Image (tube, rainbow, N blue to C red):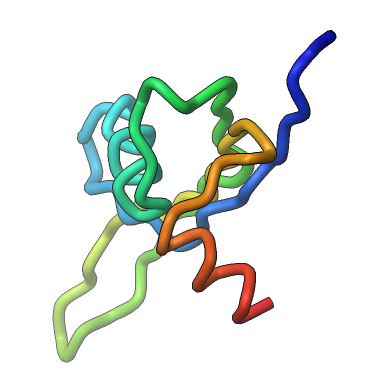
Length: 86
């Protein structure tokens, strides 16, 4: 029987211009408080360029939302906080 899986979306991850997309996975795992061994699937759900000004200078960066597929029984403190927040 296949294990039950849940998909969690981690929003607002920052990625500098020119930085490799592989860093998004590491940051998403850290934000969710789970280890790489527990990850069953990963995808970048949204990637947008943020070019807002900070004073007189423009700060270019990507803002990324990523989906993490994990076992349904997996719990971490960060996932519990996110679930309580809605």
